[in-house]
Length: 607
Image 1 (cartoon, one colour):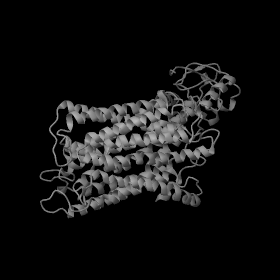
Image 2 (spheres, rainbow, N blue to C red):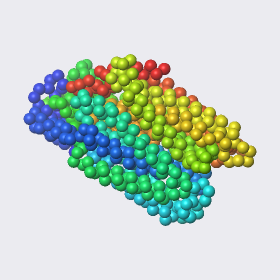
Image 3 (tube, one colour):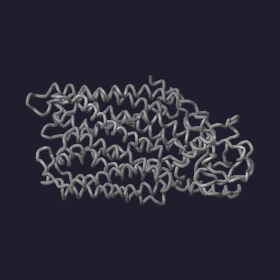
């Protein structure tokens, strides 16, 4: 559909029998109630077809296998940069942060295509195919060009300098992996949630549980990567590890396609960008008009909104300046007049724009937490590399200690679902236990404690470095507390984010809501990279090696961790303020998703 003119509808309090096929991106059209009912019924049948826990479990298995494939590359990438490509510590950490940031930034692209044009199923399938192609190219480039001689890059045998062709293929491959996995994730999360009908109370509860299982499946997949695959790669079997990741991605894609006839599909709602832009343009054009009664605002009749396949959103009092986009000017009072959507918008369209504005402050507050999270893939590994990795006669890969993070997630997910939710439900009266914003706030606090634990570990590691030695005598298992705390914080922060943004996002941009969680991780990686550059620029002057030099024994990595902890404290204070201000979305014909459209003031209980 294009963004041309549309047929006008009468005001809310004057509506009677007629309904127009109106949308921010619809063609000129007019349908009567009977035709509208048939249209709405066709959408409803599409929503109710199959679905349920059967297809949902198939999608959870897909998530586990795809994550195994992705983390088979991601978990040891920083060591691949240093050992195989010969980069220094700071450069490798920055390259990993930029790559990881690109992974999750691609989630916005996937979400846009999913919501606008392709739908969740097709978007997930296409991006999984890109992931497979990237992994095949990565496996071939490492086998043919990079890991020479065979078995190099194990920390003992140095790899030969490779050609520019090999390096070029490597970067192309890892960014194809980033594009494929990043674009696949938000579509898959939302597609899984689509398998449950929100209009049925039991399935609404199942939808909330699904997000816990979704993050659980993610960590089950990464557990294998962080234990078995990381061992292969740490001992120089990089190509074998990459081929195993490729096989996992292929199995994930095949299993995903096998469920085609079982899934419950929600049709895409069209490009949301023109819809949001039209609200601002129309409001600016009518900025001099006065609104005396909100019931005079423009809306269509029927249960469906003007946005294809979307429920109506009730009017809210925030950002009243945008309401002017739905005011009917004198020349627009004629019922047979064709209306230009750049001059007149429906209430639901205006509220869709308001929803995006309301979610942004909460989302911005999650970025600093993602700075905490991203340390596991970079500086935690570098820190572990200069600790005692011996366990009897066995050498432990530094990256494999992240298995404690995964185990922490798995255990804490069970504790949360089975103990904390019932207990908090009895105390608060909220059947979901803690609200999503409360969980996110708790995640911030635990993340801050993880950075303090990492800083204390680094102080102790520096004290135990023998003169003339490269590594400390402190066991790498001293990193366990920081990994466990990060894992516990993930259960509260990321599962809470997935639920929060998916519930608060309007029907037409559900994948966008899911992608905000991943986009937060993306910006967290970029912010982390920026912090490393700024810290080194300030602290590495003259003869000073700086806080994060190539030889960590000459630096102060502990101070960098404490800096992040301090930033998290400031971020938490801002988050509590934003949580008090936030007002949840309310749909026509039912309660809002966060208990009768009340402000989420209980987030203050965190302090």
